[in-house]
Image 1: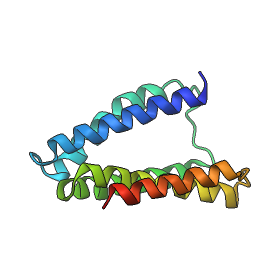
Image 2: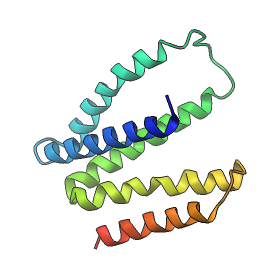
Image 3: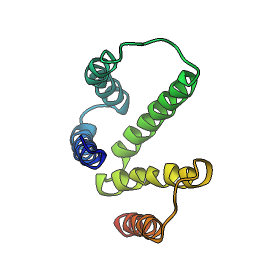
Image 4: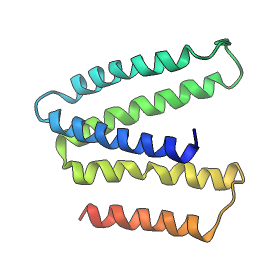
Length: 133
């Protein structure tokens, strides 16, 4: 399946996740929301992981653990912010995480930088600026 279509699926699911999380954030604690939603992620992730026949520890795995820790901490901050603020600001603002891997990819992975990439990132930043006012 094409990576762009997979990205659209992720976009729709993350958007749905953000909506559901905000919908219930006033009725449950951020701790409970973080726990139960993260627990539910284990089902599709476990099924996906079981499709890998190797499953052995390799050199890049510590970085995977670091990525997981960063993701977990981000979820904690996200759920607390969602409880305290409007979804229309919290979700787009936290969604600006896209700038970090994009810029790091340009710098460290030597990915191609084009005018359209830069314009896209600037437009994303402007969108969040206007949404958060």
